[in-house]
Image (cartoon, rainbow, N blue to C red; front, side, top):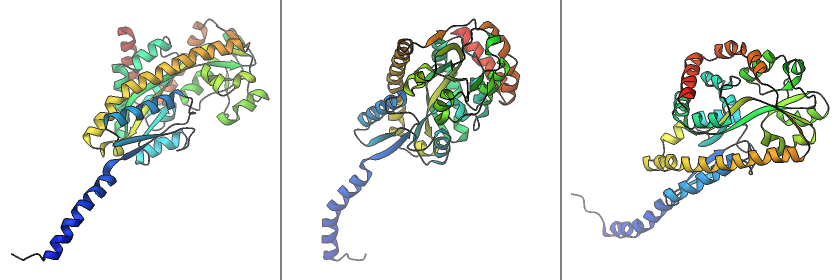
Length: 332
């Protein structure tokens, strides 16, 4: 056996206590980045901040989630790509932005898919929502939870109370096949407009209308340039909390468990915040003197029904998923 010089032993004895704290410091904190496109006053940010707090508590400070608002880590399409490649850890995103990657999620862009906002929330937070989250795994993402839904109606300077009056309206819509085909079937003219340009487009009459949730009308000041809000409630647009599969699976099992255990309370707090903001937005819309119109929706739904075939044609398993959603609605 080779003898180890005393000097080497002595140096090792000194180095060992110094090395151990260094390793501990290097491994003490894991920083995860969560990105979203909304402001720091949004429900995304509220839920993300709560998630950060809870994970910090559950890991005794070993894991820090840093929340980046206002598209600081990119727009929704970039966030999706970043999550798939492992460039970010977590994100909030909207379902229409996921449709190019997961075509079956186009089923959620069917018009009047749910009977109302409350039913949509119950189903997306229940077993049906969990079933839909499994679609993210094969494309490099982990669906942690569905989040708030944005009930979208039509804000306009050209009011309508029936289907005939709505025909020909130039409307800015999300560039998702489900949204475009729906408004085309109704007889409106879906008009591509960047969201950043929508305020001026409405102000200058480039478009007559847009389909947005009530909170967007307030948060992005559209109440300053429109006079009517027609409660078509055409789509219940879901948002979702997603983790990068590669980044999430690389975390220790106890950290993964801490994140999953923290999600329900974070989502609950974010949903409560959003629901309050949504109700306050309606109050503010009325206070601003915006004319709220509630038309008979039956003719609109009937006119939009032919769009189902076109929308479902883009979703390979769309009809089967639609049947599952209808069955879940019947049980709810």
